[in-house]
Image (cartoon, rainbow, N blue to C red; front, top):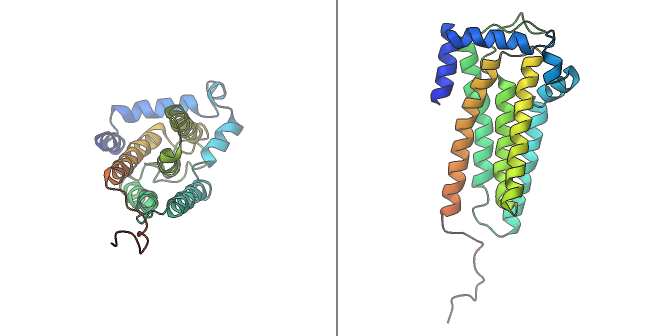
Length: 216
């Protein structure tokens, strides 16, 4: 949260990071000679679109439904807290991003949305980070073996990095817009991870025992 506050302060106050941010954006945009060597325009557009709510939310909903079904099938009485917590983290994204956008009211970078304002923090970057990150946290308990868990986590990190680069390359956001969203999303995902660990350490609860159990 401290990093998010730092990014927000630098953007709002036009601090040193603000100037560096704008120079970096110009070096990464599609009009720059450096840009295509990092991520070609079609790929940048594809990854930027992965931050759309219409793309990311169905992925999370599918994982939520699968995790709930898996727990109910296993006979867990308290099958609903992990999916509900992940859904709450996703709902917190617009609840936190929209007010900050209105408060900071940052103009957009040179590009297709340059005439607008309210670009900090990036809603697309936050949506991708929380949706795909929460999906991984829900899936991790069912993955056998640490290498598989690390591979899935690493893949989601790489996807989110590509989403951030794509948003900057296509001129949809400044780099600090994306960085601020990652900091905010990290707080939400940490809270979700901590809650999962707390629930995992609690005594297991399963469906009620058969009527004959425990009767002499």
